[in-house]
Length: 297
Ligand code: NAD
Image (cartoon, rainbow, N blue to C red):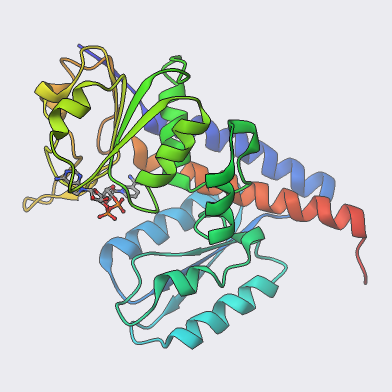
């Protein structure tokens, strides 16, 4: 039976370290990291996510602000809100909770966030830096949170990524593609599978490291796994009975895999930990900048 990768525990360790760093930043530089979360509309899952992120900020000593806008908010008003947050010195990180209502052009909105405050890593400048990075040490300051968490979970197994066959199922801009770029930067040989892929099972079976982010319950079964593989399940699917499940048939796959993440308690907690980390990094960047230019009062 494979070993469980305890995302909750690993995320908690990261959060404890960040708490100490935040306290030090406050004491030595007088800077309190701040995160603004913008939520448009009343999607219940989005509300839960924003509240979880705000609570995590509070527990880490990060200042957090929730900006709740009605569903019918016009795109230009949302952009005006983002411009205000770009100018707000208390705010080091801005997150726009996705998905946005249909009448809003998501890509246009994400471009308005100051790339220095783009703690979700979705601004084209940061995504472009991720694409152009050759190696891990060249990555942009803000790597998308879920993909960054996926890499930390793989590394927690003690397995070296370099030279491994990695398969990523899913090619979204927020999960699949950045995960693939990060694995490349870590020197894996990467295959990206998606909804039009033929022979998905054979491809998955080649994987030493399998990351599944498709949003399809039980897409990956025990037959699709190379014995001993590392399996990271990003999927979160709410079943009719209210249960949250991943994309991997956990009970069967855990018997074949070397390491596996559960859902819940795997990737999810890591996403939040990485968001907190990016916010602290943003605040440190700002503090370093103030150090150079000096403050005016
Ligand atoms: P998405 O819908 O944007 O993308 C899904 C991807 O999966 C697409 O690229 C599609 O081509 C591929 N796909 C769909 N059906 C497939 C199939 N049958 N075979 C192969 N590929 C298939 O979704 P997303 O935003 O990338 O999220 C993926 C999943 O991860 C969702 O379940 C989402 O809820 C979850 N998620 C979890 C976290 C977390 O923190 N735990 C964060 C983000 C997303």
